[in-house]
Amino acid sequence: MGFQDESGISEKPVVRTTWAPRGRTPVIKSACSWKNLGLAGAIICTSKGNRAKLCLRIFNGSIDSKKFIRFLKDIKRRIKGRKLLLFIDGLPAHRAKIVTTYIKSQKHWLRVERFPAYAPTLNPIEYLWSAMKRKDLAGHPPNGLSALKRTVRKSKRRLSNAKLLKCFLKASKLYAS
Image (cartoon, rainbow, N blue to C red; front, side, top):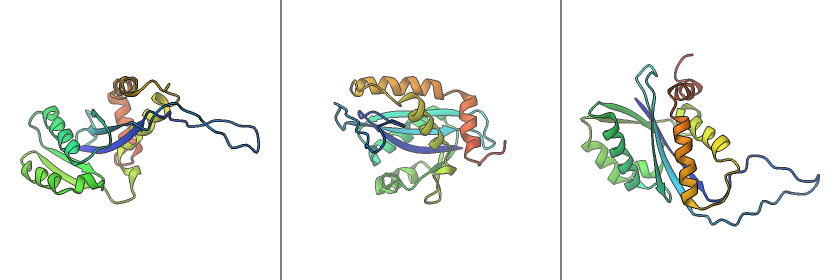
């Protein structure tokens, strides 16, 4: 069983909180551009939520249908011939004709179901994105995309902890405590 989602980050620093004198709107200046990275991720686990593993791929730019198919191929290599029920959201890239054709051709190992619209709290990987952005990327110095990729890889190593992934599964309320 797997729970998939995408997220995007840019060179602009993630700012969670700031301060300013009363009555003055804070202005945050950054010398970076709007270049961004697309992150495709999936938490793969047993039907009972055990043996959770993280699959994460970093792409330059936003996730489109071709990048999504590459990510599905990465998952296929990772699960080594086992079957997978993958839950996805309604991203337009997921509904593209090229993607639906690819998924139909992979029925021997892949079954895809969509989450209900407007239900991000059901997807456990949303909690992973939140933890990554709140802890690892908050206040990241603007040093370009290569530095940002290094920070994401370091965050992936931290968040790949099986106990932490199990907490994300429980937070979604899809699994009992």
